[in-house]
Amino acid sequence: MAYDRNNVFARILRGELPCAKVYEDAHVLAFRDIHPLAPVHVILIPKGEYVSADDFSAKASEVEQAAFMRAIGKIAQHEGVQQSGYRILANHGAAAHQEVPHFHLHIFGGRDLGPMLRRPRPGEA
Image 1 (cartoon, rainbow, N blue to C red):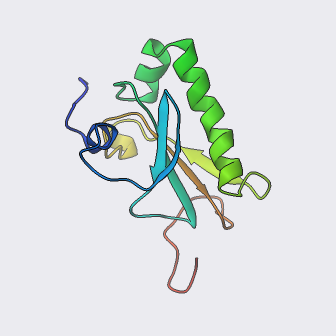
Image 2 (cartoon, rainbow, N blue to C red):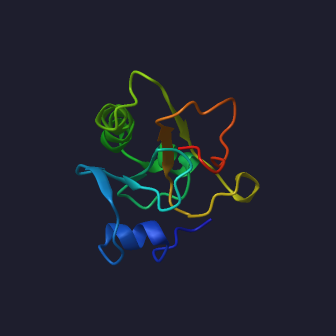
């Protein structure tokens, strides 16, 4: 799959669309999901043009990959979920329901996530 330079995350990186930034460095950007599934729901994206985890692991530099992995811990600490626990999730391709063709991780936390992630019921955080 070719990289689509008009995907929503590419537009956020170019400043064409706003985001609620949580973390940024030279290689990554993290921001709050606009449809959160948990009290903490952050999207982490590399600044390079990568479609999937496969693409990122094959083409990103070691510096980009290290920055991406280090950002996960920094975000967890910043969001206060490092001790209580958090989940990271990356979808790849149609069968996994990848909605944006730009490699990204979801970081979830702030409540007991159970064995699988689900939308909170009314009255739940």
